[in-house]
Image (tube, helix red, strand yellow):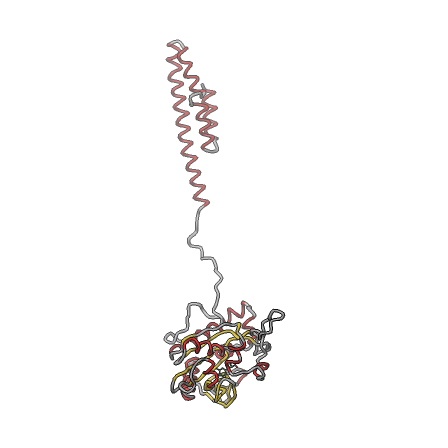
Length: 354
Ligand code: DAH
């Protein structure tokens, strides 16, 4: 019996897990366990022998059972400790860095321009970037022989061989949206169209893709004076300071009369400052919408008239935020984007400030 006790108590103490412990239980005190078999032998003993062996076997069985129970608790505790150690979480650790994007200056300025002009009652209109030549040229009074077609360094889409229709173009300006909006909405109309435009051109101030915003206001009595007021209000709000404008007579096929608009600036110390000094910087083209353009847009020029303008958004961003090279806008250099980018949480609004 001492051998049995030693054997099982040692093995129980060394059991690695609950399965091993259960095997030991069966081997010792299970139905066919060694201790159980010994207890069956009691029947064959003399009453005197039984009186001695019976209590000893019962005591051994109890001892083994309580050793099993104690070991079971110990194993469960150890398992819980291991889990606690394993799943421990330090809630005081600083949070992991998450890459945070910024708003591109072009998007920022588009929002700013839109906020200002929306406040004056202009709705945002859109058109396709792949445009047919009627909308991009003819409807805007630029016939096929017109020099403006080549001056604009147009990108042409390919046509299938044998298809002699004029090819589609990547729109060279946002002006075709004037036509689309007039045809869609009729007069009166007051829209702006910010968007991408394309020309085969590349240097410090030109990229093959860039951004313009088009403006169009048509009503019964709209004049150049309204145009001038809108633009002066716009520039002052945009630059946050009173900005003088200078209208220079010019020529665009889609306006008559036409004017190029300069804003007051200084060039001192190698930087451009808008709203001071006595230099001028050309920033947009504009004029009174040509009667032929109104007609192409399905609007009767005998009844309606209005102004239009087209302005470079990237140019505005360079001026306002002091960015010297346009090409860097589209290089996707993270250092540049972090430096010139804007917080996504600061949406430009008139009341919140631009
Ligand atoms: N579409 C012209 C360009 O891309 C800009 C322009 C000039 C737009 C005069 C206008 C305008 O609406 O009236 O150079």
